[in-house]
Image (cartoon, rainbow, N blue to C red; front, side, top):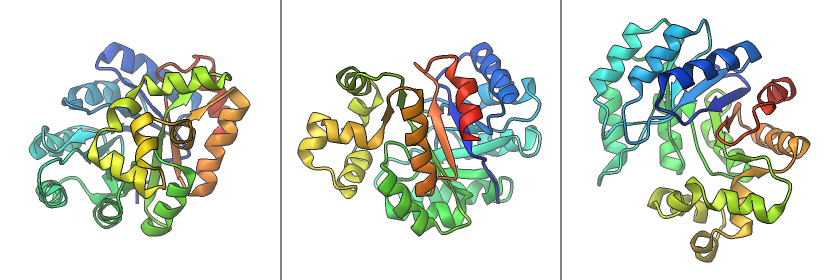
Length: 263
C-alpha cells in the first residue's frame, strides 16, 4: 500500500518551469508528495516534466478527470515514469452514473496501474468505499476534522487519507474569511457533490448559500503560523495520513517552517 507521508503540497500551475522549481525546493525541504492540478485539463505532461527533473519526491495528479483524460494516457504515463514517482489521482466523473464510470475507468487501467498507485477524489460514503476497495485511499477537499474522523472509520486503518486544505496566513478573521470566500469555495459550494457533502457534515442550506463564517472556519485553515500548525495537527489527529497545504498565497518562508513542524 502506498504510504503518502505526513506532509504534501498542492501547487496550482500549468507552467513546467514553475512546477519544477517548486518541486526541487520541496524535495530539499523534505515534503512527502507534490500534488499538481488536473482540473479541466490534462496535467500528465506537466507531471512527467517534474518527475524527470527531480530525484525522489512522488508527484500526484490532484485530480485528473476521468471524463476528460483517456485511461490509456494514464496507463502510459505510469509505464513511462520511474516506479513510485507517479500517483494517479482520479475523479471528475460527473455523468448520470459517476460510480459506474469511475469503475469502468479503473477496469481499463487495472492491468497497468496498481491500486497502490491510485488515489480517488472522494467525499461521500460510496466514493470513500470505492477508494478503499480500488485505490490506495482518498483525497477529499473542503472537509472538517469530524469528517476526517468518520472517513477514517469508513476507510479502515490501512487505506491512505490525504486531506487537501486551503491555508490563509491571516490573523484578522474578517480578512481571512473574505480571502477564502474569494477562492474556490465560492465556486465549489454550487457543485452538487460538495454542497451535498457540506450538508452531510451538518451545515445548513443557509451556510452553503451564504458561505457563512461557520462553514469557512470549519473547512479551511487560517491564522498565524502557530495557529495554522495547530489546526493542521488537528486534521492529522482526526485521522488524516497526510495534510496537503495549498501553496498559492502562502508566505514563501512558511514552506520550510511547515516542513519542520509537521513532518
